[in-house]
Length: 226
Ligand SMILES: [Zn+2]
Image 1 (cartoon, helix red, strand yellow):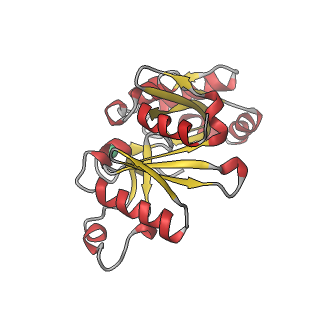
Image 2 (cartoon, helix red, strand yellow):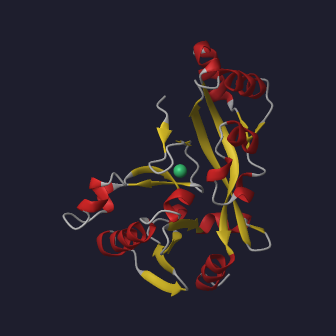
């Protein structure tokens, strides 16, 4: 399992949709954007690192152009510095994509809205993902997590992120606070078949949340008449 690094801070990215981005060169316009490719500003990154860099607005502009002009997602509105696009061609995937001009992109699926949890300045939307991470540089941690999960327990995402030294690279720390890793039958089977991975990697199911700021949720709910 490869270890992926943020192109800005060089720390690890672990595959959290709400906290990380993949900057795909397919969105760039060549030759205008040769500056971006020459500077190596593509690949994996933390959302926070992109927003804090000077490149966020360029990527935001290119995402909007691509979604709107190439993929033909209609622009359904603007609010402050956020452009909203709509995807409604296949029901379980229908969503509103909110792109802020600082380089933040949030994809809010219609089907996840009923599960939203209100916070003071926005909402959390519960999310379930597979989390497969290489922990070969932290073998004791890998072993601790694997033995806990294998016995049917859960492990805190916040604690994992702290021990990996990634706490300072979270854009919405609140969204990972109650996150937890568990193993399903397949994960346990895979671990049993690969005992050498006990101290190297963790394959797990991750339950955590994506944070949606108040203004983005307000627009979304008004648009969908909810
Ligand atoms: Zn980073």
